[in-house]
Image (tube, rainbow, N blue to C red; front, top):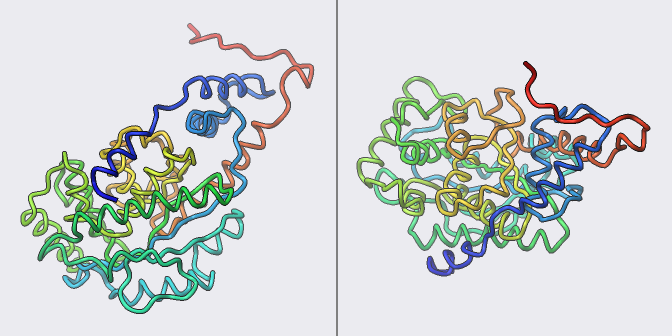
Length: 356
């Protein structure tokens, strides 16, 4: 896919179906419960209706894509472990023994680990969508070429298309890559127009000296590349990673193929912000599940204009926060399919506006 073809493809993304949203809202009002009693759960169902164009919402078949990629800037000592841990976790994802796999069993969600840019041998049981053997060190040059960036985005869009064809109705984002809180913080700093210090955390538990190296690497890269926040593809290719680019593709594929996509933590949220910068209409497929404990968590969701369902201080990654929201959505759908005031012979509530 060329950049022109990408632009032509995402130009097909339509605005939300407001008639379907209104129908879902009206359906909630008929149910035997206080009006708006389920809060954000109700509006998320309405958002899904506006995306799919259907009042009846089905999210029974779902999958979380865990994008695994190696990050070149790890060479600058920005993490407490090396990239071998990325491979180790990918192997355990294939064995279904990681945290997200345990949680997925409870949430009745399939886990799909994806190699989008790991170094070394391929991992059996991990879907091979590798663009290259890891990104370059962004303190020395661009993390990816523009063509590689577009290739990773295209791959994410194709996953949505393919999994929808298999009958999946809800997708979630996840990632695994040692060093990717450095790349996501760098991208966030540029897109939000703020000092890296405000959006950079300790990741998996960096020491003070490690955090200092992380900040210096980000500042050095931004000074080297002078990324233009009005050119999100350029920001992504200079400072991002294959994992982030692949998630951008999921967020663009969601509205294109009318499949809701759950945003996980701060790295997933950075990818969501990039997708909105590339195509503002892509926001209609995004459901914010939780707000990360990382410094940029709230700032990024605010920039997108989304409210999270959960505030639990999570920062594990892998898609774990997104999976926490699935049982809540299941319960919301159960109520949505429940009894109306009429069926229970109860007088319906009416909107009465503000009280004096």
